[in-house]
Length: 338
View 1: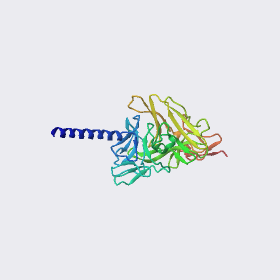
View 2 (view 1 turned 180 degrees about the vertical axis):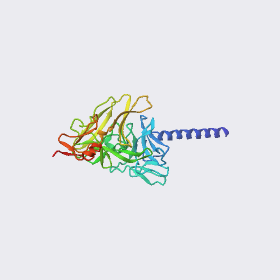
View 3 (view 1 turned 120 degrees about the vertical axis):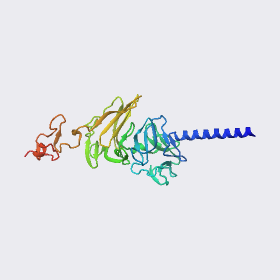
View 4 (view 1 turned 45 degrees about the horizontal axis):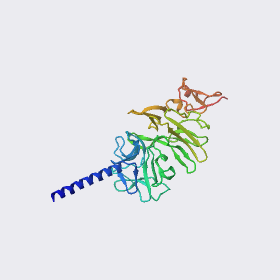
């Protein structure tokens, strides 16, 4: 009898251990099904171990956000779901609702955020891809056509490889980057970087309604103010047709990965990470001198960074207020000679 009790106890312990391991594996997988959910402290990990999805509190904040970060660099957040509606009660739940949407619930089971797509599927699953894209798709079909919703269509402050920035002209979807408000607050900040489609397309950085920087127009081959060039790390693509107008870059594979960020100060930064390295290197910074500021020398003025003063009038024009120009205030514009 004693031997039978020991065998029964051993079986219970073994079964409990297996159940625990299965639970941990399901949490650490890359997919959520309609009968699953996870809470803060649990994560999804992409199949190649590149990205991780979970709840986090940035900096000194006690608020909870759902985000995606590099598995090896959890401090680098590349996407945030509920930027404008944080969880304040420290109880976050991610699940698929009965109507097939991906939703975030707080401790009272109130909906904090929803994918809210117009498309639905009879049985949908959410999957974190190794590209960093979180997709809601039909369970039986993993093709891009089956995506009901994807995080790549709603960027935060970071552009990753294979992520489009620009317009779907058929649906009106505009994908653009928005800076964080602060290191402790991922809600939309002051700076927006995207493609302006008024007239010929061009990249524009705005602070509110004010243009701070632009690349120059797309002439069919390149942007007039900034080239779109291949590097050892990535190959850029610009697509412009009746259906879509977007920029995207593809990784060239190999041992380096890159990301593009608009930071809280409005700087456009491209970072690169070499294989085996524990530190990201700034590959380029855009808008690093005064001549990059939009309209720095006013209308009919030209900026030359290697000259002092850096602003001068175009041929045939003079300053409207010479005294202001002499004091390096070029906001008054220039006017034609009379």
